[in-house]
Image (cartoon, rainbow, N blue to C red; front, side, top):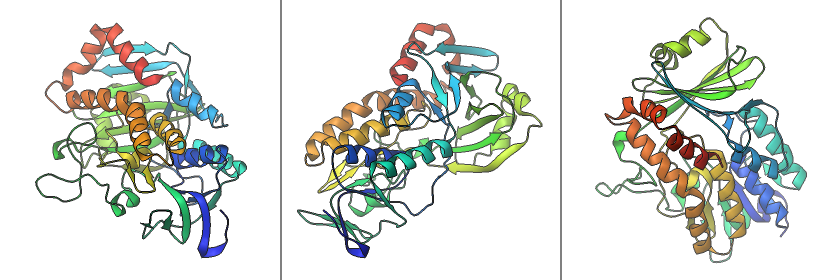
Length: 360
């Protein structure tokens, strides 16, 4: 399909030009489709995230044709009040990569692949049996990659609903939480030489802090916690980490994201497919959002004309992270929280098996 101006036509319309949306655009171009991406923000786009690419995520990024610079990561270290549980990745290292660096390289790769990026917001999504329209672009299919607070998910009626109120909101189970588990993320970079080649996860009384080296003199600190969490207040509850970054200059603003857990009633509606965080998200605790999002992007393109097939592929791609993360978050938000790191230290084989399952 072809076209110009506000009446442009295309095969695949991707809403959201973040890493998952750009991956979907690359996959669709490789499949031979004409692709338009709607993204109102100029590249590169930053986001509050941990910035650690697990080995499987790094492999997926390379498969998309990019190999961003960063800091090698050999494993994961859980740390709490002097108790440490380390696991080194069995399949080789991951990499700490600044979100802006990753986004810039994927953006360039999507353009090189022949995708068109338009600076527009997707408002007023409409569809019929043959086409879907958003922001003046008519397409055969629309891939909604517009994140946790997806406008497309809401407009096509796929937001999860509260059973009691009927209002939009998270739903219980692996596709979304009840209201008690609302968690938010914060991230800022610290100008300091990395002291480790592991992703350190520091467990405090009510927050987890992820320490990810991303360059020779730069470390990202991301905090997951309840509504109203403050980065400096969180660090004050983590003496080991606070001592590491004390007095070090901060780089950039504190960025926030959340609530982490969102749900969707289904992943397809007519000619629309939900991909990545827009399709539902459990929590950032295990750091697998990008790998799962890339797998969903590939599956969505492979099942453009098969909604049921995409639902099955989505379930396979997300099963491990949904159930393992749900279980870990349940422990982290319960009286068992203080036992998570000691249990990992006492059962290194089990802890390592869970890490490997998520890292692959």
